[in-house]
Image 1 (cartoon, rainbow, N blue to C red):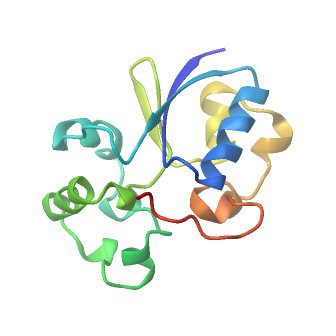
Image 2: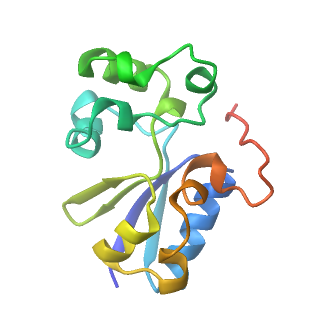
Length: 144
């Protein structure tokens, strides 16, 4: 099974569930703090570049949920500027296996990419990503 570099928001219930699914499938993880990682525009774009700009954003981030930031209205340069200034806005998790990088956690896509327990791969996407994946539906609190 592949070794996965996994960038998470520490304490996020959704990320905890995702890590558990990956480990149950036999993967090993090297977990990194998404919020304190020394991101640059280049390193973020290695993950985000193939996606539409709107898909770069964590929809559970307070500034996105409130409508203060509207990802669909942003151009790439302004979006990167916002993400670098406030990493809580970055859609998570970010995962890397060798030279391949992924954003977010769609169980079916993860299963097709590196293998995942078939039961977990069938879970709805809305419950598999971000704070919405928290079993108790409690909001993730921003890191201090």
